[in-house]
Amino acid sequence: MAGMQPTGHLRGDAVRVGGDARQRFYDARGYGRPLDGNEIALSRVEAAHLLFRGDLSGIELTDGSDPVDFERFFVASAAAADRFAVRFLVYSDLRDRGFYLSPAREPWPGGSDAPSDAVDFVAYERGATPDTGRVEYPIQVVGERESIAASGLAGRTLAVVDEESDITYFAAEDGRIDGATDYEPPGSLSGVLLADRVVVWDAPEGLYERGFYGRPLTGRAADVEGALQLSLVEAASLAADGRLSLSASVGDAGADASGKRGGSEATTDAAARIVARGRDVEGDRFDRRLAVYRRLRGADAVPKTGFKFGADFRTYLDVETVEDLPHSEHLVRVVEADHRFSPRELSLDVRLAGGVRKEMVFALTAVGADHPADGGSEASGESDSVRDADVEWLSIDRLTP
Image (cartoon, rainbow, N blue to C red; front, side, top):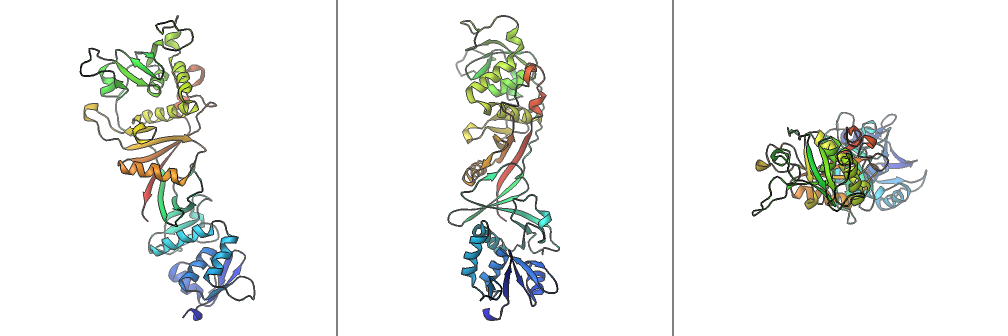
């Protein structure tokens, strides 16, 4: 009977329970943390769950006051503790799934196992207790209308509570991408810079067929061979490596009617001119995409536009020939280093990637106007500042605990 259950006593932000509480709640079911003798301390969420289940008869909110029931304790805790309602929903759901949980802070068990202060609970391997179990899921609880800092998210499990109190779980992990595409572009390419792309008129066959750079400017009835259209990101990367020069630029100041510029400048500042055009087209976002593109190419992966999927890139890990092209494995979206997700945005991206059987990866990079993607004054030579740009990779997928 409920009247035979112990009573809790709120002291500060913890609820103390005496009697046989240690054996009954901590040892047997992983609630709370031990104090002296058989007394334990419960967090507000743990105490509310025991009260909800009828395992506590009530809780005294102040010394000597009459114990209150679940409804009054829930409302009082929601007023006193940050995000109490959504944290209770997640705690209760994971308990119902068979997990033991602890608050992810000292001195509760598991507090030292949380990867960051943003984590609310740690859930142990199913069936394991806090004093013996390995942490399975570090849980960060998020309401539908909150925002989530992208940086440092790897290693956590997001529990998003929507407006109807349904819970969706996401696993956030290191999303670093490594490929196995063995292709070295030639070093003597020459192209024409158009409004938002570069055309290489006499591209070697392998540039597209084996490196999967660009797209051929051909058709069934075409009488032109070897013409390849490169995106500005592809062209800027090749130019930064010294593999692409420009014979003409349409729209550049100082160009004649044919688009040609005078002097040796046409072959010495290709990277700077392409990057400048990219910034004209899309601002600082171009620098971030170029940094990520070069990191992916440097890891032997092949990035191509992800426009059809609402992403910046789709990636192929092992391209031997375009004729025998595998399915792309990832969708990559490039965001600022200080980006904050809305749960709705995150859910949309992850759902879309899962629907097309790809992994959703976010590339967080600080490259922008203060960190030029063209490598500064040595734009036509090495551009290690881009390849070594500070990029944090984050993979996010749906999870069923």
